[in-house]
Length: 380
Image (cartoon, rainbow, N blue to C red; front, side, top):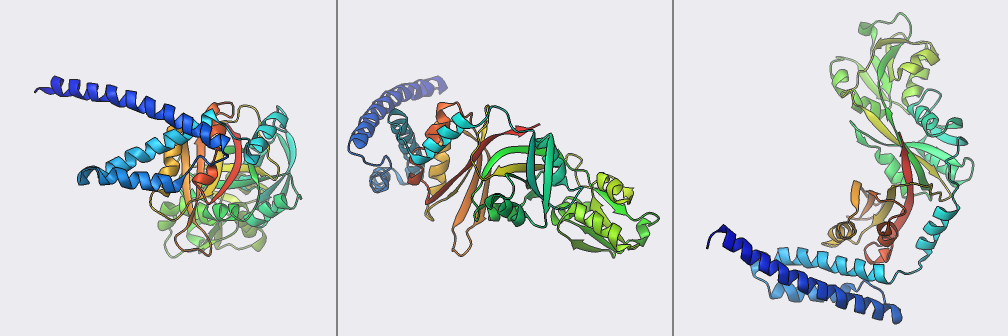
């Protein structure tokens, strides 16, 4: 046999497999309708475990893992098909549909927003990009912003989520597990860090540099060249600039934005000291109420998965079965638990697509805890 003969044989096998797969999905649809009539859940983990065990027993040992992966995907495709044919009016689905219908067509131009830091912070720049005319209330910590939203002190809050150089802001993800909130917008800010000092101070005079830990990480290459200089993290880049101004120190510097030099009367010794020129920070805008504005195409969810083999794979299979693109996957350990993690997903799906609402069907079948954070647009 030559290559063409092998390919012809594969083509014939594929034709038969497609016929059998179509027949299997038709039967799965009948099972789905039966389960709906009897008020039974779509996901039956015991049946799937038994089926996978039987399938791997009848498979050659070198192919057993491949067969298990294949049928795990087939099972998810079958569940997705059943859910699509027999959608259930869950509380979450009704909440999402109501938010899509009742949210105003235009995002507010003016709003009171909570930010961490002081005047001149990058959060302020992000807030002014999201809202045209915001009123900003500053808080000392990220938790203060979450608390302000949770207690109704401010309707919106703006928080940094990740940086293109330094990665995710882990403390934000940890706080996400403690508070009830929704994401209603996101934006990206180009971050250019400058070395700021009081007027007249020279680079060789510097004995200590202050900034936020993320900024220090983003400027690690520059800082490695500053010999015998103490590096001190502080709450915020703008707070570092303000502290240098108020302290009167002539042996200290701040890593902050150039706008803070003008704001606090400081001198810029060097611009763009970050490791990479294309240094961006992504910010999210949160609110307590669920607001889904027209055209939203990014959705964020958090879920805790069972601590057992295949749990994450089964979740990823759902995205694959629905043809949904995952934009971000983040994991954080659950406080007080052993080897359990919270998984954060950003995925791309228009709120008007059938796959969007279908994703939320029977989520209890894959997660021990599930939290829908919101669907939103990113400001450009």
